[in-house]
View 1 (spheres, helix red, strand yellow):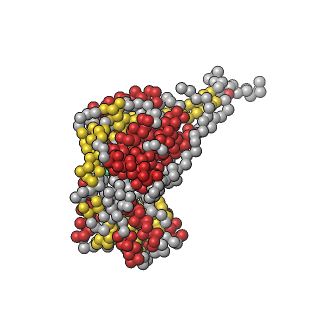
View 2 (cartoon, rainbow, N blue to C red; view 1 turned 135 degrees about the vertical axis):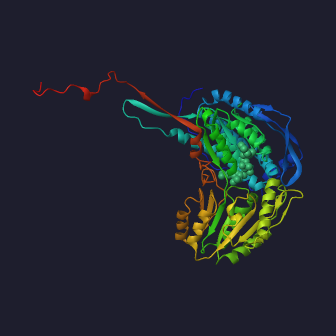
View 3 (cartoon, rainbow, N blue to C red; view 1 turned 90 degrees about the vertical axis):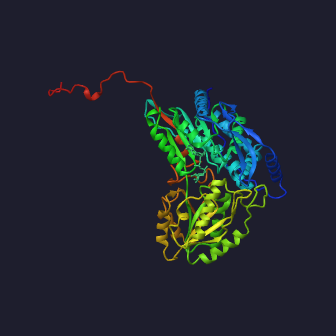
Length: 550
Ligand code: NAD
C-alpha cells in the first residue's frame, strides 16, 4: 500500500450525549437491548489472531446488582494462551505496522461511527448490566467517551506526525514515528468501558499490535468491544483478547522478551507489582518497555469560606456518588470551612435522602451496586470503622446490603481527625469523608490537602474569591493532575481535559491527548544529503600562504 496525498482527517468533535428521557425512542431502544441481554446467557471465548478460542475453564460474568444472575460464561486463558496471543500479535505486526496511517485511522473512525449508531445500545447495555452503570453513566462512558477516544486520537496522531525537524540547505531531515518493536500489553480496569477501548486502540492506531487482558469484572463489555473492533475491519491479530487471572496472564505477558510496552489502568499496588516484574525481566527484553499506568486516587474537594454552598453540595453528591464512587476521579475527601458546614451538611442530607439506589434497568435509580463482594466488604468495613471511632460520625447514609446485589448507600462521614484512614486510603466506593476546618486556617488547610494522601489525580477548589482560588491552584500544583475550579473533579472529556495524575496516581501520560500516543512510537530521524561531499578535507586544512606572500 502506498499514499499519494497528504490527507487531512475529519475534524474530531465530542459525541453528543443521549438523554434517554421518558418517551424517547433512544430510551425504548436501550431498554429493549437491556432486556434482551438480561434474558440471555452467552458463552464468551478468547479472541486470538482473529479466531475464537475456547479453553473449557469457565468463569461467570454476573450482574453486581443481582449477583446470582449470570450474563455469560467466559473462557479463561493461561500462560499458553498469552504465548499464542504474542505470536498472533507478531504475525499481524509485520503487516499492520506498515499500513499507511490513514488506513489505520479508517478502522478507528469506522468503529466510532458503528458505536455512535448500531452498536451504541449493545455496548451501553453490556456496561449497564455487567458493571452496574445507570443508563446515563453507561452512555457517557461506553458510547460517548469511547467514540471520542477513537475520533480524537486520529487527530492527535496526525499532529504528532506533523511534528518535523528543520532542514538546512542541501538536505532533508525527516522524523518517522515508528510503531514500537514488539507487542503492547493492555490491561484494563472494570470501571470504564472507554478506558478499555482506549488502552487497546491507541497503541493499535499508532501501528502497534496488542495483547489485551480486561478486568474479570468487565468481561461482557470487553467481549462486545472486541466484536465492534472486528466489525470495523481491524485485521486479525492486531488486538488479541485474553481473559484470565491478573497474575497468570500478567506474569506471562510481562515475562515475554518481545514486550514493548504496558498500557495499564487500575490500582496502584497492581501497577507497582507489574513494574517490579518488568525490573526482574530487564535483561531479557529486546527493547526497554514503555510503561504507562494510570492508577489510584484520593481525590479532594476543598471549599474556601466564600464558596457557594449549593454548587458545593451538588459537586459533592455528583462527584462522590455517581457510578457509586467508582471513578478514579471521584471525590472521596472534602475539606469544608466551619462557617459553611452547617448549611452544607443540611443540603447534603436533604439531597442524599432523595437518592435511589438499585437495579440499573430501573431508570429512576441514580446509583447501582458496587462491583463485587470484595468492594462491598471494603465499603462496609470503612462505614463500621467510622461508626465505632470516637472522632467520626456518619452524617448521611451508612447502610449496606448484599442480600441481592452489592448495594451501599451514598455515605458521608464527618471526621475531626484529618488523618482518619478514610481521608487517606482509596476505598473506591460511595463513601466520602469530610473534615471541617477552622475557616481562618485556609493556608494550613491547603497544606493538609497536599500532604494527606499519597495520590495526585484529581481535585477541586470551590471559591467565590478569585485570589483564594488562584492561591489554591498554585499551592496544590502537584496534588492533582486534573484540577477543577468551581466544578466537580469527575467527568473529564476527551479533547477538553486530558486525563491523568502523578505521585501514586500514575505516570500522567494523559489519556485523550497526543501525550499518550507519543508513548506508543519510537521515532526515527532520517537525514538525506542531496549532493554528498566528494573530499574528506576541510578548508581550514589548506596550506597557509608563506610570509613572502607567495
Ligand atoms: P485492579 O488494579 O484491581 O485491576 C486492573 C487490571 O489489572 C485488571 O484487568 C486486573 O485483572 C489486572 N491485574 C490484577 N492483578 C494483576 C497482575 N498481577 N498482573 C497483571 N494484571 C493484573 O483495578 P480495578 O479494580 O479494575 O480498577 C479500579 C482501580 O483503577 C482504582 O484504583 C482506580 O483508581 C483505578 N483507576 C484509575 C484511573 C486513572 O485514570 N488514574 C482510571 C480508572 C481506574
